[in-house]
Length: 292
Image 1 (tube, rainbow, N blue to C red):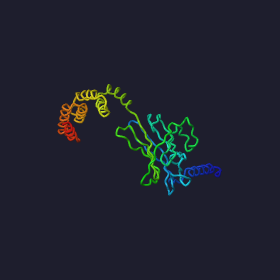
Image 2 (cartoon, rainbow, N blue to C red):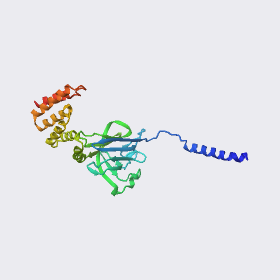
Image 3 (cartoon, one colour):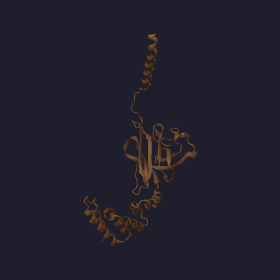
Image 4 (tube, helix red, strand yellow):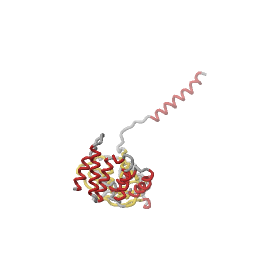
């Protein structure tokens, strides 16, 4: 009877050992590790996900079979399952409309230009020769440039974000080649809707609305009305940084006398601030000097 009692324990021990063996793995570095880069451009979140092969002494882009990615041959824009890019809003890529979503990136290198394809069905993966025409969202050519120093590992960046936050480049760099894929975003309509809705709900948003109108050269009379309404509430007139915004708006409107008066008010408030002037004394002095 004792032998029979031991059998269940032996089976359990064997099962446990088998389970532990199946879970035990040797982990080593991947030859093409996963990478990603993301940034917000305007109000649009952009993310590039890819696998990063290394040069390892190989010739990467060029004419003929001696190169890893020959000119004129479609490439999955990375290793393994390829490269994807996602946009949280509708954008333009290489001046072509692209709805919000995630896309497979397919590239064809050339000596001076590269063909760029954004493919709507990312499940295609590395099977880039199996594309269907109706799933191609973008097909465009972009120039390639030569780098002075070699980039050993494939690298993507979201680069060259413009001062107005409307433009950027999806940049690929590997070996001695760089390619910039232009992206243009639009946020004005969304901001205008937000201004219309939120300045009614929360008067504190009047300053943000006025600043946007000032920065985007919109109706400065409306911007000034919003600033005056905000500054007339409670102790808001003591906020020297927002009084300075009023001075800037008046200056852009061409009202030099009113702008100098507001700038002097902002300067005095800033100079007497217990927490410090945060540079607004000099800002106001510079504005006043520019108006004389």
